[in-house]
Length: 154
Image (tube, rainbow, N blue to C red; front, side, top):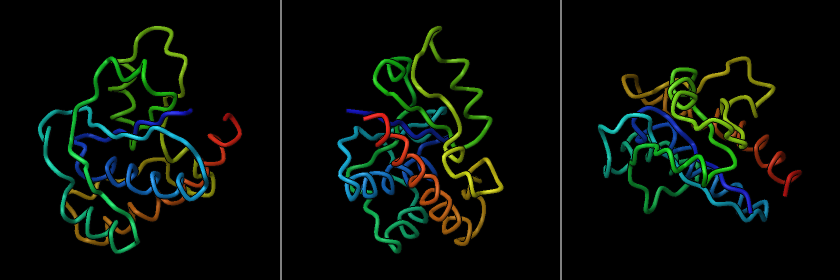
């Protein structure tokens, strides 16, 4: 069984959206995958996802049920085969935290969306609702590529 951790800054917008979307898409693909999300910062620990993320995700058919923000822990590197950052800043933070010899895949989530010209999922927190819709779209694109990768290595 594979395991995937999605990571953004506060774990209230991008990474919980990725968790919700990938959970549904992986289930539809028949994959047995452990899926979670976390943030590199701990400001929102215990909080539910941002209401704007939930609205955009639910409008597209995804559920955020049971999600609560948490901070990335060093033990996550022993638990997850794929640790995927939403942007380069969070990837750098994860690389600093990763134990030497981590054998999983640590990288940018949008690397799994080869037809996208951008490599980072933009943080919609300070923008309008269109930013949250764009996040859903980009994550859907990357989810398909990740499902293909996980399927190949299962």
